[in-house]
Length: 179
Length: 430
Image (cartoon, rainbow over all chains, first blue to last red; front, side, top):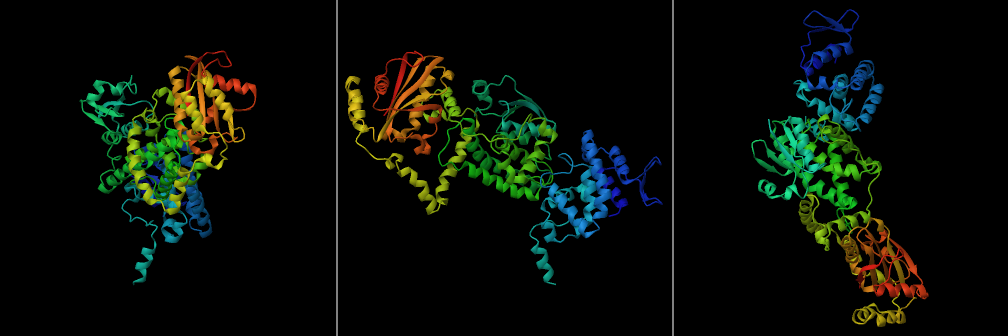
C-alpha cells in the first residue's frame, strides 16, 4: 500500500475529508485540503488529520503528552522501518516476531485504547500480513489477534474483504485440493 | 438517560459492574450515602423496595426498583456495552455473564474468602484448581480475541473483569499469573480504560498472595458471636448465600466425575484415625472421662495421675498468643468452643480443660491438654490445623510436681493465670 493510499484510508478512519493527496516531485506525500493549505510528510499529514477529527481514535491519540509522543514515535517507526522492512523477507520476519512479542502483553500499541499509532502500523503491514500463509500466521498469534481486532472495525476495513485468521486453516487447503 | 440511586457497601465488585456501565452510557447514578450494610438493607423501608434485602440494588429516579447486579448493569449500559445491534454478539455477552456467575465467582469466593478470614478453610478444597481451570479457559479464549464479545468492550468484559478483581488483588501474585499472559493483557486493558479507572480507584495487582491465617478467621468468628459453625458462615456480605447455592449442585455432581483412584484417595483420610498410627498404651480416655464427669476433682485428679501412661501419652500447656486482643468474655468463650468443635475428631484420644482468666478487655486463655503420642497432635491431620497456631504450646513433664499443680488447677477450674487474673470460665474438651 503506497503512502497516498494509506493517508486516504486513515483519513476515512478518522472521518475527515482527505483532500487532495499526492506525491510531490521529491516523491514525498503531500496533502492539500480545503483552504489550499498544503502539508508534506506522512507524520505531519497524520497530525493534521487528527487535529481535524472528532473521532474516538483521534481523541485517544491526544489524551496526554506522553501518549501523543508515543503515537508520534510509532508513526515514525511505521514510515522508516515497517513499510520498507516489510518488503524484505528477513527484515519482515524479525519485524513480525517483534510485534508479536509486544502484543503478548498489550492490546494496543500505545496506552490501552486504539490510537493513530495502531492505524499507521496496521496499514503499513497490511500487505505483509496479507501475504502470510495460514501456517505462518499461526506463528504470530498475538499479532494476528491485534490485526484481526482492528480489521473488524468498520472504520478500519472500509469495505475491504477481511483477511482470514481462523486457526482451522486446513479448511482452506482442503477446498483447494478439490479443483 | 437513566438516572437513579444505587445502594451498596463500598468497593463491592458487584456494584462496580453497574457503576462502570454507567460511565460508558453517561447515566447519572448516585451511590446512596449513609448506607450501612446489615442495617439499611434490613430496614422495613428497604425490604419493601427490594424484598431480597441484597445489594447492589437500584432505584430509578421515577421510582422503579431493580435488584441483581447484572440486571442493573444492563439497564445502565450503553448500546455498545449490550453487544451492539448484532444478536449474536448480544448472546455472547449473556454467555460471558453466565460464565462469570457460574464459574468464576463460586471458585473465586471459595478461594479468597478463607484467606480474608470470612469462611473457614475447607479440607480437600478444589478452589485453587477450579480457579486455575477458569483462568486457563479464559487464557485460551483471549489468545485470539482482544475483547470477549465482538470487537468492542461490552458488559461481557466488564462483568468478567469485576468477577476477577478479588483474585488479581489477593491471590494471583506475579508468578501465579505468569502462565495466564493473555488474561493479564486483557485484564490490564480493561482496568486502564478511563471509564473503569473512574470507578475502580487505587487498585493494585497482587504482589504477594494472601495465606490462610487461622487467627483472622477466629477473630471474625468471635465477632459473629454465634456458637455453631453454620451460623458463623452466615453472610457478612450478600454474596455468600448465592455462592453456596451455586456451589452445592456442583459439589453433588463432582463425585461422578472422580475415577476409582481419586475416590480411594478421597476416602482414605476419612476412615483413618490419625492417632491409630501411635502405640496404644495403657491409659484409657473413656474411663478417665467417666470418672472426671461423675466424681469430685478430689478423686478424679489422683485417678488421672495413677492411670496416666507417660510412655505413650503426653501433657501439654497451650496459651493463646493474642490475649491482649481479647475483649468480651462471651466472644473469648466462642473462640474456645469453636476450636473444640473443629477438633471434634480428636476427642476420642484427647482431653483438655481450657480456662479463661480475667474479665472483659483484660483476659487470657490457656489450657492443659492430654493426648496420645509424644508430639504435638495437631499436625497429624489437616482438619486440626485451623486453630492451633494461635496458641503457644509447651510440653509438660508428666512426673514433675509443677505439672501436678498445674493439672490440678486447670482440671478443677481454680486459681489465677500468670498475671494474677482470677479464673472466670472453663471449657472441657472430652
